[in-house]
Amino acid sequence: MERDVSEDEGEKAVEKTAEETTTKKRKIQTLKPAKAKETKTKTECIGPKKEKQEDEKDTKPKRKRKKITDVLAASAPKPGCPADLQKLFEDNFTDKRSVIEMEELKLPDSCFLPSNDLTHSLSSFLKEICPKWAKLCKNHTEQKSVVMLIVCSSAHRVLDLIKQLTTFKGNAKVLKLFAKHIKVEEQIKLLQKGVTHMGVGTPGRIKALTEQDGLSLKALKYVVLDWNWRDQKLRRMPDIPEVKLDMLKLLEGGIAQACQAGSVKLALF
View: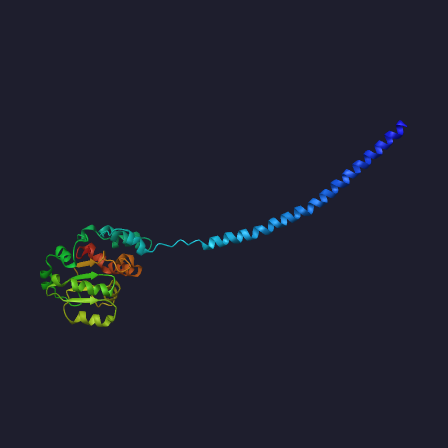
């Protein structure tokens, strides 16, 4: 009897183990779909979150680039000096000219007259740098040439400067040299017609006149650059790319060599 009981207990234990194993398998099978479902739900949630982040990025204000007007408005006006012009020459010509050519274009310190410290009117400034103007005008007899060139950024500025010359020019003849409404040929005829003492104009037109032999630099003694004046956008002549380039080419086309020879003086107004 004892043996039969043991066998029964053994059989029961085996059956119990088999039941437990079956139960575990069922649990595993039940859990698998749940995990898959959970994973699917998580995957589905990722998409909207990304979209939300992209929307948030789009709504952020873009950083505005600073304009030259903003930069200049924030800085206090500073008078130009010879070093500014020298640096402009180097920055624009160093990579385009050989060392020898750069030496030929170098403006000697001796050619510079005192610069405007922002306290002068045009007439008072010219009286200071050119005290013998009346005598120079009297001795000037060359046609197609001028004693003084005043170079500025626009036709409008040319007209303003000519008005400011009243107390300085005396009996001197002044010619406006800009492209607006005036053809090069007309200005060449005016230069040939009589003796002109002073030319006030834009660098592009003055350069065109010298290249076409309408304006000679033979009698030239003074070149005044309207350096400090700012337009409505607060730009000076060296701040406007096309005007700056024309100005540098004008200086390169004979004025720099005349400065080296000592026959022409430069001033920044």
